[in-house]
Amino acid sequence: MFADLLDIVIPHTCVACKTPISSYNSGICTSCCTKLQVLCRGQDLELRKRLTTKAHLFDGGLALLYFEQNGVSQRLIHHIKYHHGKDLAITWGKFLGNVLVAAQMEMEIDFNNCVLIPIPMHRKKRRKRGYNPPLYIARGIQEVLGLRSSIEPDILVRTKHLKSQTSADFHLRFERLVNSFQLQNEIPIQGSIILIDDVITSTSTLQHCAQVLRKSYTLKIYAVALAFSA
Ligand SMILES: [Zn+2]
Image 1 (tube, rainbow, N blue to C red):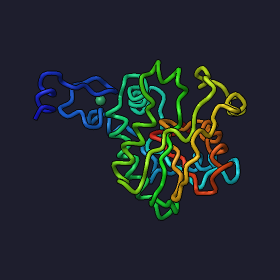
Image 2 (cartoon, rainbow, N blue to C red):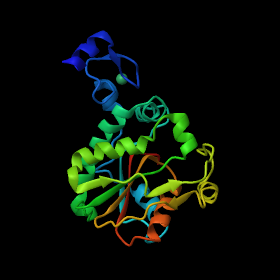
Image 3 (cartoon, protein in one colour):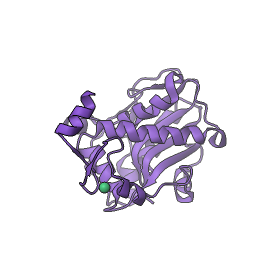
Image 4 (tube, protein in one colour):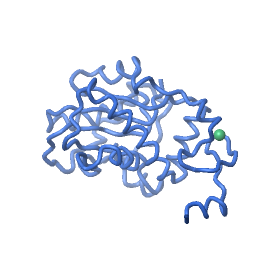
């Protein structure tokens, strides 16, 4: 009731086109929703290729949406990342969790005692931004998986702070990220490991994280994100 009252007092607007919406739930209006390009069952050939360039790092991966420059998906992700979109990160994390559950058989994911690891943010960046979006996406996924999964944000730590490097090519990005992540807390894990990011671009960040985890774990490692920039 309180939420309904808030909706009347402060009407919500679509994060993509700014038109008023009656229910904030997904953060976007029906019209913008139809413009979203969704990956078929979370899969894409190019995504698979990028995740498997280095052998034995990932056992699979998926994303929910295609990341489109100036499109609805970019505005949604931008809102989640830069405008304290914690609630939206959780909501869209739930959508991602459902796609993950649907892919369980095909990808042979072991959800029992599986561990969700949000890609860590450097503490300086987290202080500036206020929160780490992948952690909240993980919370949404966990709402779907339930207690058989746990979120472990402290297994990995980001020790190197880099400026945004969206324009750098893959090899440059990859080189710059060397030694950026460390294993901080080695805990026993029995199920699969699911690394969570907001957007998968070159996969260099995910690969560095997986490399660090591979030194201690022989379990299956998956990479999932809300969007994939093809
Ligand atoms: Zn809209």
